[in-house]
Length: 87
Image 1: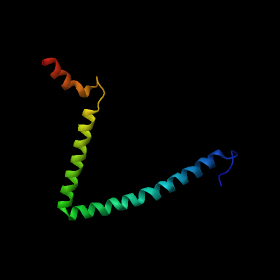
Image 2: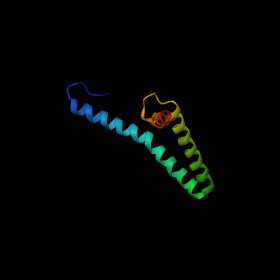
Image 3: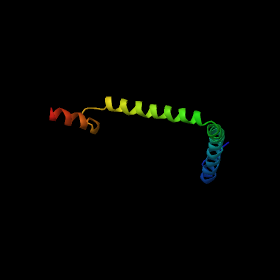
Image 4: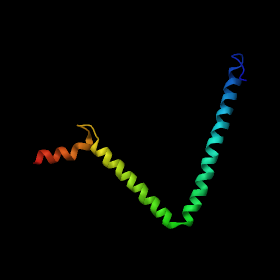
């Protein structure tokens, strides 16, 4: 249990320790998984190539989506505006 308002410094210390513990519980498995995945990808260059291709396709798709869904007047429409003016 957390101490009441009689010792606010102790309360902050306890909450900080709880936060640090929970952060470790979450981030430790993430780090271990990343290390295992890194070693696996380094041993399989073809898998790494496909990962690069897939991430490139995702970025390309996001860029196209951003371009087509931009609000009128955004800087993303600058090229289209220049083309309309020159036509």
